[in-house]
Length: 242
Image (cartoon, rainbow, N blue to C red):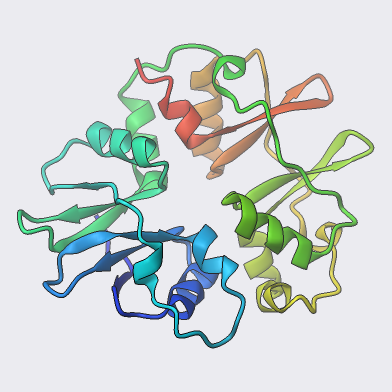
């Protein structure tokens, strides 16, 4: 469990956007008048608001949140994250007061080390993949992040995998703010990660999970030979828990 960002339901959406834009979190939890958990707002909704100032509050964007108690097992918390398609969960007391939170990235190594994973990569991967081109601009990629909810995209050139670009790459390059403003002249090819960890579609799911842990990545492009045929993320792996 770790300290997580928490907003009051009267806080502005621009405050949520600032936290989600610059931090490792994809969700922010929101409390009510009694400091009880009301729900969460995710990066997709926050990034859609492009104005630098806005009177809109987070209350209108709330979604039901994955939550658990301090004694809940790691596996049960992971199942809650999978149900809500979140990358974190709030840890609350009996009055739904937030004590902290847990990230799927931190639970994932524990889960795969003590559970059997059934099936192959091809059985669990997402076959419909959103890709970008090296020539796409960073504002275009930002639009993809805001519109799709995904934070990383395979980069394809001439039908071959050329790299991977993520929200982390935008932050690391210092281009996130310009991308939001639509004024960045950099392209995907300027900031993308070129050395990409991939997995073949015929590999066992357990092998793919180990690749994710060993290389600290949340998504693996899936290849059939040299052709991109899918994408596998941590939620897909959790679906293979025996």
